[in-house]
Image (cartoon, one colour):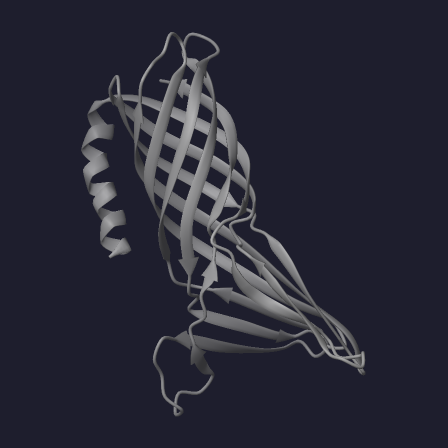
Length: 242
């Protein structure tokens, strides 16, 4: 369903953006985890009573770099096509046992396209607005182990679909230039297509496929995991009317 909605956004927006007044904007921001899920579990078995601690978060956490092309349809409505890159959050799982310690680091990143619509109004020279958009994303995840094991797992493939929104304000800076600040939300999760496993000491590499359904005769195949990439954060930037 999300796939059809995202494509629908593009089909509806393109005619507006061809005929209307154009603008571009760019910005940077930082997001915190939204829709956190369990990423791992830290374990300490080198004590009398074994201890566990859950590792929770979302890989949407991190710095966000944004660019967008937009069209002013009328004084209250704009259409946008955004491009963003999220550096992604890093999370650590720490395991201790009689063999020593093992640190597992999970690091995600995501490139995404966001077709959307912006509804705004004007009070004096201030322009508050709200934006809603679909998200068409290409995430990736790297898992690295250091300690008594030294392995690397690279998860890639499959497109993720989700939704986002923003509430912000535009302020005039010069004749065609405005600055903005906005509170942004996104809700998206991702199921990768494959995993490349590298045994770091030997350099041996194996590739595993992820499938939602499979059977025991399919070698190097396992069930598709899902990873959260939702976030809530603040962006600031500049908008230029063309």
